Image (cartoon, rainbow, N blue to C red; front, side):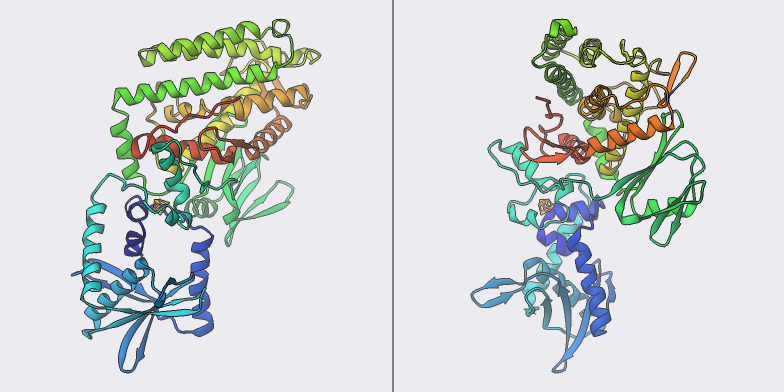
Length: 535
Ligand code: SF4
């Protein structure tokens, strides 16, 4: 399979075999199903596993038959054969794979094999593949090339034939179209990144609920004995708020299926999470090396500050459009944000960027009260940002939403295989991972501030029921937490058109896209990270 990937695209080989990234998309599942069905229907697959020290390869031959006294290895493929004037042909990657099986078989049986066959089920054709000296040499050369690539920390470039990417299961990880766009601004990228997430996030907010495993499903049983069942393939993450119990078996199942498990305190603070993913060694080596480059750090930090401040400015402008901004009290805030943007474009170091970003934050939060309707209950008034602990209801909501966002960004960073503790803008001052705080800057306004302000103006919050006040501290109650989760999760499903790539994605997918584009700043073609802007 690795040689098959290598012949298809060297980058695919590298991602799968060296970086150990595998994505089981619909076609991969369909291929597995075909093999299961063949075993069930025809009882013919032998699935013979063979290994060769001389060749340094190991492979599983689908089927072995005798024809006219000759031993012939067969490979089953779900798709179509290639076409030529001479009739159906094997694809080069399939040819290499089946020839490698032939060499393995010859070594094990001591019998010379002159032909292999590939059965293409979509076209119902069987193609004969002659195994001549050239075919053998191709296998040996491919093994040498595979070994060379395995020892490199550099990812090979994307395929020059962009049609290969349309059928590649790793396109959402590789992002070839985005790399082509980064190289050529006139490139019109095809969206190969899934628009919506396929798996859901499950929040467990009931204290005392039990999360268990039953076969390939997760079960959640509340204190009254009500049970909900979720097939594991439909779950992306489990988020436990407070003290629900999760069994070792359930954690094991989540880890094996790359389902994240995250814990929040009952007060809404993120505690920790388990995110199983592909081996990240190569990606982390590249990250560590890149983040030692002060020039790169500064460029990324500046882009991040522009993205954050532009979003803040864009939101204040959009929400106050058509209104008297002086009366609303957002005029000064807008001016302050514009000044901060100007100053950031002239900043010469990260420290001064941090200063301008801090100024922008103060102006933004000073303008935010002007976006709230003026007939709100006094207890929903907002007089600036405070935290740890929040001292009013809006700050309690802001903090809780940012904690939810923190979790999503952490999950995306871990899924991409980056080290969250090494960031480029935030200093490691608290338990929060700097890289997560960095990436969050891109999303705070669109993912939480905007839907939160809208929900407050829709009078969605009950000042009594949804909050708990203890002295000067304010927390969300159970009902408040549930509402906030609903607002946040609904917002994640909203679609947004990326101004540079030109395609639309749900915010849930955008978080992962930005994490992957960040990795490209040092692993491929830089230039697309943090280009999101609110207009
Ligand atoms: S998406 Fe294209 S460039 Fe990337 S691994 Fe697949 S075939 Fe290669």
